Image (cartoon, rainbow, N blue to C red; front, side):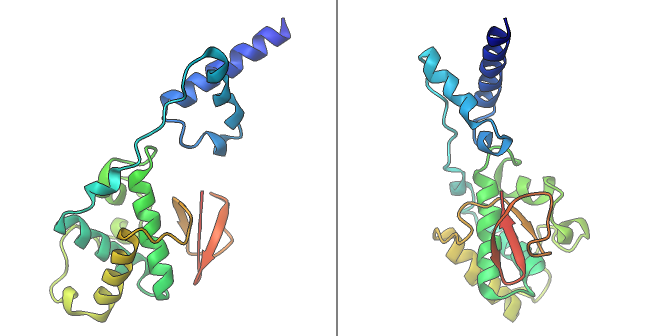
Length: 178
């Protein structure tokens, strides 16, 4: 009886995970539950990872540059690359809002957005600033595929001190993780 209940729970968990895209099953500590599908002869669905193609418009790139400059502009260049890559990882992750604008404005995770500094419109003269040029270079590098964080989707400016996620990469005063 206990074995039947346990197997039923595992299968229900596996179905739930699969219906959510299975992207974060390993983070919930039940990654083996998804393996129950192979016992049933079904394939585990794989989420599409091509949402970066949505971040090609000039407005989206400007928004990302503004966000990087506002959130990570006081950090070293490589930290800005990491931050831009982390935002792009969120765009690809099905657990975050759809598209760059959704990630930036709907997630509620960016203090510069909450403070009204990043609104989707660049401030006058911002494109001529040194901060803009550095952030633009970092964004270009991240858009070209550079991701020192190895797929991180969370960040903290309190390097190594966040309890909200498991830090896996520290860069210039920021922690990145899953």
